Length: 190
Image 1 (cartoon, rainbow, N blue to C red):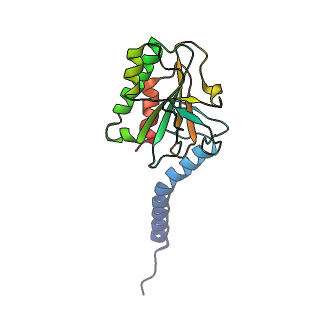
Image 2: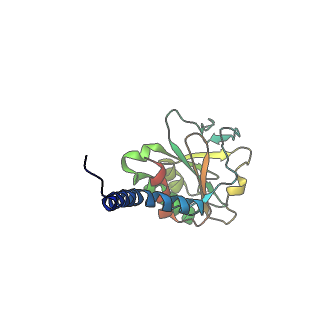
Image 3: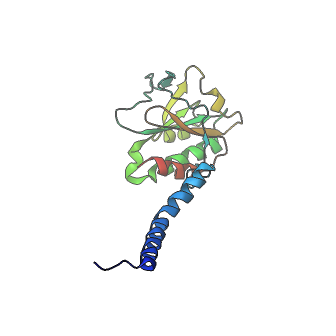
């Protein structure tokens, strides 16, 4: 048997350690960044709902315009975009609602995975109300449990993105960024 050269053995062990370090370094850096609280790409455009709420568990009643109760938990997994109108929904309110309906269409083949629910008095203009009903389910918050999310500014809307199990994911106050909301929807609707 040929004797092992100690220098060659050290070199091969060092080479093995360098290979292991190349693979372990990204995991170590990611662990340190996560431990420090920084996580890339998880920040949404909406505000997180704290403490987290589940509208199914709360038995939050919403009555639709046809008198039927709104089912937070659907027969298939679909998210709900709940829009809460401020007082006197008019031109600006309708413009935001139209933009959100267009954003739903931009989900392409996944647009059926998002339900649009409007809570509040619909626009007074009959033409706008009819146009809105083509995309939106109209309803009302029976017990006022969503009052904290409703804007107080006239002709404005706020929004809630709700998971298919009834868990409210994020809140978008009046004046929210429509494209930002679309980006958030694209992240969760797949």
